[in-house]
Image (tube, rainbow, N blue to C red; front, side, top):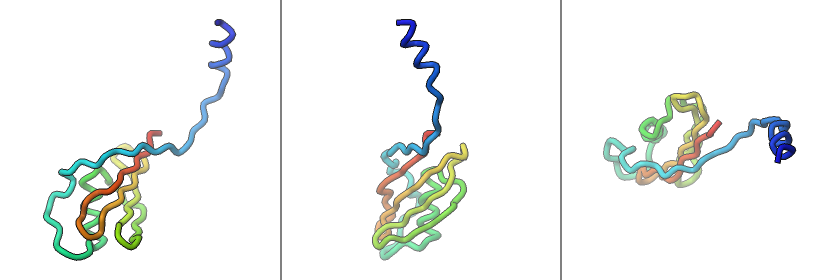
Length: 96
Protein backbone atom coordinates (compact mmCIF):
# COMPACT_ATOMS: atom_id res chain seq x y z
CA UNK A 1 0.00 0.00 0.00
CA UNK A 2 2.83 2.40 0.84
CA UNK A 3 4.62 1.60 -2.45
CA UNK A 4 1.55 2.61 -4.45
CA UNK A 5 1.38 5.98 -2.67
CA UNK A 6 5.09 6.63 -3.27
CA UNK A 7 4.73 5.85 -6.97
CA UNK A 8 1.75 8.17 -7.36
CA UNK A 9 3.67 11.12 -5.93
CA UNK A 10 6.72 10.45 -8.11
CA UNK A 11 4.83 10.89 -11.40
CA UNK A 12 5.33 14.46 -12.68
CA UNK A 13 2.29 16.53 -13.50
CA UNK A 14 2.01 17.28 -17.21
CA UNK A 15 0.11 20.20 -18.71
CA UNK A 16 -2.04 19.65 -21.77
CA UNK A 17 -4.77 21.42 -23.63
CA UNK A 18 -7.94 19.80 -22.39
CA UNK A 19 -11.35 21.02 -23.42
CA UNK A 20 -14.67 20.57 -21.71
CA UNK A 21 -17.84 20.73 -23.77
CA UNK A 22 -20.52 22.79 -22.08
CA UNK A 23 -24.08 23.21 -23.15
CA UNK A 24 -24.45 26.86 -23.95
CA UNK A 25 -27.12 28.72 -22.03
CA UNK A 26 -30.09 29.77 -24.16
CA UNK A 27 -30.03 33.26 -22.64
CA UNK A 28 -26.72 34.03 -24.36
CA UNK A 29 -28.41 35.65 -27.35
CA UNK A 30 -29.54 38.96 -25.90
CA UNK A 31 -30.87 40.73 -28.97
CA UNK A 32 -33.03 39.20 -31.68
CA UNK A 33 -30.99 38.19 -34.69
CA UNK A 34 -32.09 39.53 -38.07
CA UNK A 35 -33.00 37.04 -40.80
CA UNK A 36 -30.09 36.07 -42.98
CA UNK A 37 -26.49 35.35 -42.17
CA UNK A 38 -24.92 36.90 -39.06
CA UNK A 39 -22.14 39.38 -39.51
CA UNK A 40 -18.88 38.80 -37.69
CA UNK A 41 -19.78 41.65 -35.30
CA UNK A 42 -23.07 39.95 -34.37
CA UNK A 43 -21.33 36.60 -33.87
CA UNK A 44 -18.74 38.23 -31.59
CA UNK A 45 -21.54 39.80 -29.53
CA UNK A 46 -23.09 36.35 -29.04
CA UNK A 47 -19.66 35.02 -27.97
CA UNK A 48 -19.34 37.86 -25.46
CA UNK A 49 -22.63 36.69 -23.97
CA UNK A 50 -21.14 33.23 -23.44
CA UNK A 51 -18.07 34.55 -21.61
CA UNK A 52 -15.49 35.49 -24.22
CA UNK A 53 -13.74 38.71 -23.17
CA UNK A 54 -10.85 38.76 -25.66
CA UNK A 55 -11.32 37.54 -29.24
CA UNK A 56 -8.19 36.00 -30.78
CA UNK A 57 -9.62 34.57 -34.01
CA UNK A 58 -12.85 34.41 -36.00
CA UNK A 59 -13.59 31.94 -38.77
CA UNK A 60 -16.66 31.48 -40.96
CA UNK A 61 -17.16 27.83 -41.89
CA UNK A 62 -20.11 27.68 -44.28
CA UNK A 63 -23.00 27.64 -41.84
CA UNK A 64 -21.35 28.64 -38.57
CA UNK A 65 -18.99 31.15 -37.02
CA UNK A 66 -16.09 29.92 -34.88
CA UNK A 67 -15.03 32.53 -32.34
CA UNK A 68 -11.81 31.74 -30.42
CA UNK A 69 -10.39 33.71 -27.55
CA UNK A 70 -9.96 33.99 -23.79
CA UNK A 71 -12.45 34.15 -20.94
CA UNK A 72 -12.22 36.42 -17.92
CA UNK A 73 -9.82 33.97 -16.23
CA UNK A 74 -7.46 33.96 -19.20
CA UNK A 75 -8.45 30.44 -20.23
CA UNK A 76 -8.95 29.43 -23.87
CA UNK A 77 -12.57 29.32 -25.11
CA UNK A 78 -14.06 28.50 -28.51
CA UNK A 79 -17.70 29.23 -29.37
CA UNK A 80 -19.46 27.81 -32.45
CA UNK A 81 -22.48 29.88 -33.53
CA UNK A 82 -25.10 29.05 -36.15
CA UNK A 83 -24.65 31.72 -38.83
CA UNK A 84 -28.34 31.80 -39.73
CA UNK A 85 -30.08 31.76 -36.35
CA UNK A 86 -27.43 32.98 -33.89
CA UNK A 87 -27.89 29.84 -31.78
CA UNK A 88 -24.81 28.67 -29.91
CA UNK A 89 -23.98 25.17 -31.15
CA UNK A 90 -20.96 24.35 -29.02
CA UNK A 91 -18.66 25.84 -26.38
CA UNK A 92 -15.20 24.39 -25.70
CA UNK A 93 -13.35 25.68 -22.65
CA UNK A 94 -9.86 24.89 -21.44
CA UNK A 95 -9.85 23.48 -17.93
CA UNK A 96 -6.21 24.39 -17.27
